Every structure is written in C-alpha cells, then in structure tokens.
Image (cartoon, rainbow, N blue to C red; front, side, top):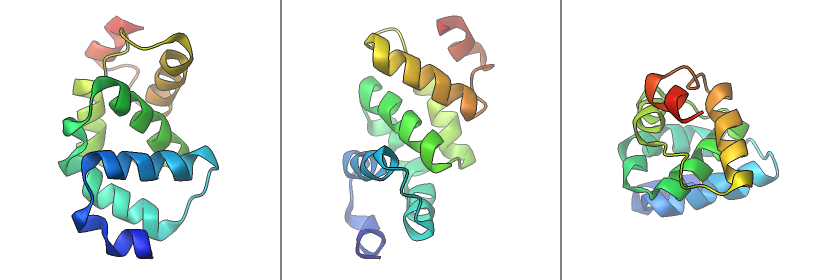
Length: 109
C-alpha cells in the first residue's frame, strides 16, 4: 500500500524497478499490479531500450498488460542491442504478452 500511495511521485525508472523487484519473486499483489497498470502506460516510453526490455519481462511475469503499455512495447522494444540472456527473456515475454506477431518485433526475432 505504501508503494501504491506514492505512485504519482514515482518516475518511469522507479516504476520499472518496482515491477522488476516484484517480478523477480513472482509477488503479484493486486494493489501494486493495479498501480503499475495505471501508471506505466503514460511513462514507459521514457525508459532506455534495455530497461524497456526488462520491464517487458517483469510485466509478463506480473500479468501487467494494459493496452497503452503493450503499444509502447510493440513500438519501442529493440532486441538487437541486448545480451543473450535478456534477449531470450524479452522475446519469450513479448510472446507471452501477445506481441511476438507484431511486424516490428517479428522482424527482430
């Protein structure tokens, strides 16, 4: 509840790190998921390509999938510059989120 209460003060990077921390341990708390679904679509585009890929992995694990965020992933994910482990995780997560068949991502796979 503390994290969700401060949601409006958190940057895109802060939100991505929160998603990462919860996703690492598959901690799916409805109040946190709801906060991420509400805030991430408006700011995820501010993240670097590597952070956006990490966020994609986190969101797939947490089942965070609002349409605006999925559009940001579809347009902004750049798998080319990622190391092998993150590339594999991001590609698998994009597929899990239903994004692997988008033309931009399909060309990268």
